[in-house]
Length: 539
Picture (cartoon, rainbow, N blue to C red):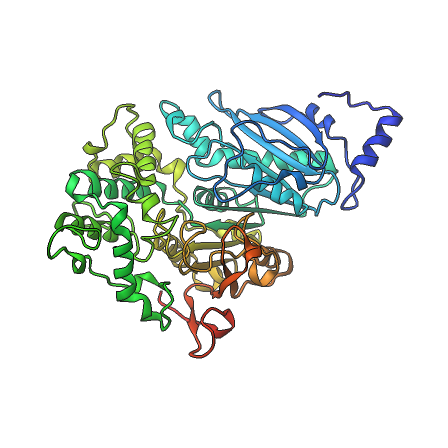
């Protein structure tokens, strides 16, 4: 609903009663934001939302692992807009502004997968904690990549422009609404959102003061080359496919070979890179069964662990680490799927090459050639999609702080990829300068952004309590930005039920700044973080 910028005395009184004052700054009425003129922007809604009254648009209430409860949201101003930096751009975004109790900060929200929707649960979590916040679909709707076919500008919007435009517009709306700019701005997200986070630090160092980047898909082109490598290894011929029924045997064999290497037999590999499990040990000695692998399956498993190499022998991307085969976020979801060609790696890989690289709706993944496909993917899309630039000097120079994390058991994005990026920053900037603004935490036993048998809750997302600093990587980032207190160890928790913390804690374990790792002291309960110490780990 639109209103004139001129309000009667009564209206001003009513607005003042609803919105009050926060951060010492007078607030303008929510509905008046509909008249705000912003570059290449059409504001389609500016509406006051009463406490507990928000209902998400149909089909826009999905975010894995984040059960939404909008009934306990406070009152806020909801602004919906569409930004068109190019004629082929239509970047939808929402900015939510607390009606009262604004903490003076802004938190930008990221996306997963191919984006295509706004994460309302994450917006709600931020509002409840007093942040002004924003989310975007990055310029398209839907969870696949069909929108990219024949639309290079939309690929750029998805790659980096959508998040940057969201950030610019959100800050302008915040200033218009509160008559004040954010004291500090933060961005936190995982997976493709982790890629978005690193893209912001690399391309737009002025956008955010603190950035939390989880399991970043930052080497996008080679990650999806790896995806196709895995898909071909397991599906080009029927005997090579490894069915889900065999994953428990693989997982058990890995643990038998490597679990005790870190001094604690707990079903968690502290650093899976040190596990040199030989798939051939599972070769069937008699009839095929779920307890063993056939020769073609052994070969396929070796390829999954090894990662792709081109015809010249160059390693294009890290292989998948042992130890993540089982569990709801493991190989059954990402690598083997429910059948040949029905895994998430197959979905993302074929979508990327069909719609962004080859731009052929009927492209057949069986024609995938590693050398040719890698070269074409890099030449056509790397500039828009890859966030691999190690030069973070401008971000550091303006005081920015960056915290990264990755689960060692990630079956979607091999964890060594994030270590490779961290190393590249150290090589470009030196260890001392890197330590002044960057931390990396590797989480043993955690799968993609969460899940897994290890402690996987440390404040990395809206659905991962608690919020005290020792247990919260996001709060640690804020303390670094606002108080100059650099993060040290973070305590991670494994709950009996990952999404019902009230049911109790199963274990806690410290996460240590890489390359340090948690080492057992040799005495005490191995489920208690107090009995571990951060010590030198493997680089």
